[in-house]
Length: 222
Ligand code: PCA
Image (tube, rainbow, N blue to C red; front, side, top):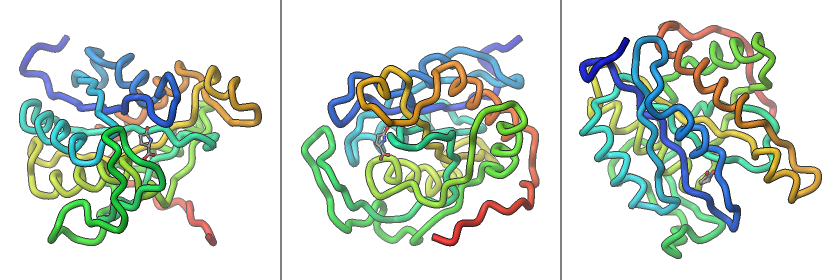
């Protein structure tokens, strides 16, 4: 049972971008909105795919909800696995314009903030638990330099500054395309919505229970 005093979890997803009619990151957040997972209630929020505006939306939600956990999701078309991101960097370098036709090149996300932050999700435990459930997952060492990294960086900066509930954790996860998107782009890997939703549920459970991350190799040579 939950009520208005239950701890809150913020799950964000993005509006569709790059001419796609759908963005799985938002479909997952929408599917989980209102659900109770591990005693906490999920609030799903759709972010604009716009530099700056997405941060204002996130900042407002952190202030209003004071979540204990924040999981931001984004689509990484071409990835075949559910990929918790390890690190957010303080740079915007856009390959394509955002939805407000902005295309920053080599601008900091937040002036005066550190160069980078690590995710505070137990990313290796998440990958381990998902693989055990039969869901393909790997640690990713780059969230890119577009709006996803922009949101990830601001989230980690604000969590470090105590802008959510005390001790709140958070991070960013890139998800694969949905099968209906892949069907229009032959050869593109995909993961069905039910598996993506199950993966975020498991991520929430893991993040709320595992305080010390696993020490398992997830390194890459390049
Ligand atoms: N993916 C983009 C932005 C929105 C989304 O879902 C990214 O990886 O930056």
